[in-house]
Amino acid sequence: MTFSTRGKLFHFATTEFRSRSTPAGAQLMQILNECKAGNFAAASAFRRVFELSPSIDVIIDALTLFPYVTPRSLLLELADPIRHLLNSDSQSIEWLCIALTRSGMLDATRKAVLIYKDDVTVSSETDLPYHLSITLESSLSEVFYGPQLLPDSIDEYEPERREYAVSEYVEFVESKIEEVIRKFPNYYRKLFLYGKPIDIEELVIKLINTIAETYDNEDVVVGRSLIEAFTGVDLSNFYRNIQLDRKPATAALEQLLDDVDLSEFRPGVRYFFGREIPE
Image (tube, rainbow, N blue to C red; front, side):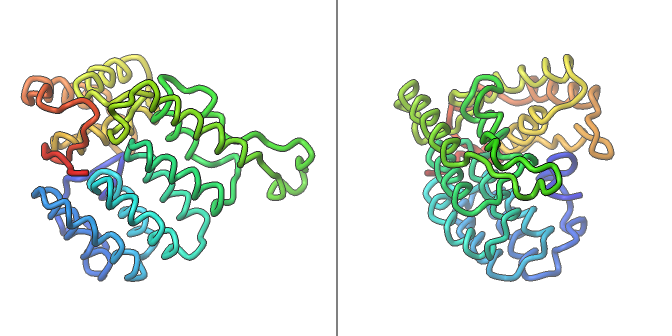
């Protein structure tokens, strides 16, 4: 799989991208190649991808790439147009919310929860609270647990009728965002992970320890994706058949520490393939 957070993420031959012959797929490949070369203005074409009636696979691929290459101002500018082009499809709009949150930027995260409140059909299966938590909290805590189920709506025979305290949850997340801003006032426009501005060298070391201590979890997926995006180092061998392959993953990270001067990556600043992404 291409654009896969558990496979080939950013390193694959064009011929491996099955949607390359479709207009939307071709546009997406152009964005990727331009951004690899440092032309981040090309991210403005994400809107065009969604205007070209993309397949569900291309929607997922586009929303995978979107947070890693799009300048902050463009990310915020494109959020609503993409939201409307998704034609009120709740699942796709939730993926958009996750993409905005994966950018790690606090204003994009705030935008994500507002879209979530208005346009997403909330269920117990949502992944957004995890991504909000890993951005805003030092460890999984209240944000991670998501909106509370309203007791009066519980019906074991019609679970689809369950209702959640979404507005209250969104207010709580917004208060967490403000809390992080107060703690790091000079980093408001930067990338946050675990409730603080990202330090890529610290993340590599943390990920090595995480892989040693646990079989697999979503933190590994997030960490690998960010490290590959920032450095441009191919970490495709992290996974075999979408399962974490611990020895090659650890070896790749240790090699990266030897080969790449991670001190050149400034805390909180977003990079793609070693190039700083402008705001």
